[in-house]
Every structure is written in C-alpha cells, then in structure tokens.
Image 1 (cartoon, rainbow, N blue to C red):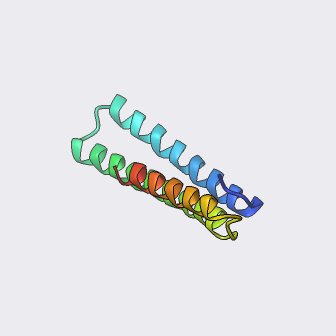
Image 2 (image 1 turned 45 degrees about the vertical axis):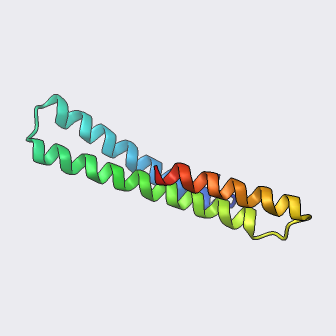
Length: 91
C-alpha cells in the first residue's frame, strides 16, 4: 500500500488509467475489433498492471526494509515476507 499522499495519488491515477484501458478493451471486443488491435490493448493493460505491481512493491519494500529490525527474528521475518512477495510477483 502506498504510504504517502503523493504515492497514493500516483497509484490511484494509474488505476484510473487502467480502468480506461479495460473499458476500451471491452468496447473493442464488443465491436469485433481486429485481433491485432485487441492483442495490443491486452499487452498495454498487462504492462500497466505490471507497472502498478512494481510501484506498490517498491513502496512496500522501502517501508519494510527502510527501518532497522528490532531483532534477528524480525529481520528474518521481513526477508521471508519479501521472498514470498517476489515469488508471487514473478509467477
């Protein structure tokens, strides 16, 4: 989750653009648009989702790893969480 008002504003703007892309894709499918155009829209949407994921992931990592750990156990738990996040992101 974005932690500053500026980050939140950027993420919400990105989601708004993605909503517009989804609506354009839906219209293209309803109108029977050419497959190449539809595939291009899908690729653009996939890129937008990946960009959003990277932005939120970066914010989370900076928040979690930017602070010193209280204990070795906490540090290990943070590393485990980051590894799990990256694995799910890279699937």
